[in-house]
Image (cartoon, rainbow, N blue to C red; front, side, top):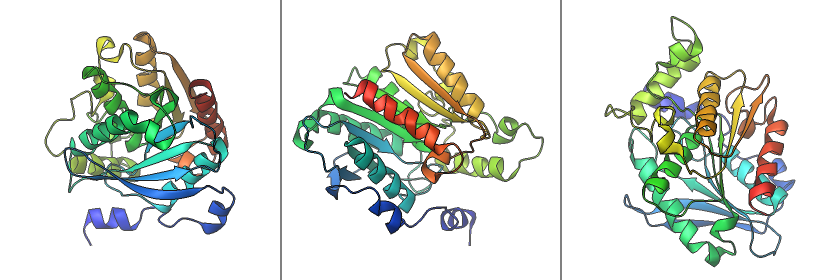
Length: 287
């Protein structure tokens, strides 16, 4: 078994928990095929039971180091949001590396977001009631997508929520961890980076948004950045939030004490605190 197969086989939360899903009833789930420059993209749409119009909407990008596909815990997270917040959740099952290295997921995501923002009325929502959200590698992608939309002068969502995002794919993960030798998490980070960015483009701001200038960041939509104290990505997430503030972007920042990477979707220590930040962002910007 090679390293990639091992990483994918050991992924946590592969299967959704039926008992958990029963707590959060929804009207239904359907699969959409959205046209992109790399072929159709699969998007899972979760519809709430509420019939209000326009419905708030969330376009979400899951985590997984850019190499793990859609998992049961992603189903749980999306259904919970749709049920608790009475919102549409479009969860993007983007193409993963190394089969589809950078910038495939970024460009696919940009195309999906552009399409959905232009067609929200067909689903009972509109762009002014839509959030863009991502966790871990998905957080990196939504930042990059926001930068791309700004560059193209394309419509933006009402707000962006990024949870424990990697914002610096240039620095060695072992340096981020503060160790001379790579620990298991930083060694895994090296693998993720090599699979996602085999082409040496890690200095591009869409891959490493910590390198973006104030001009690059200015006039982005409001951001909510959630960081986990016990995560080697914590510092760069907080630094990125500071860069946004310095560029004049409206920013909400939350560092959750004692939390570890992926805690929100994994529902480990601190996740309820982070959920409240996410829900408050929805209520503030989606109406």
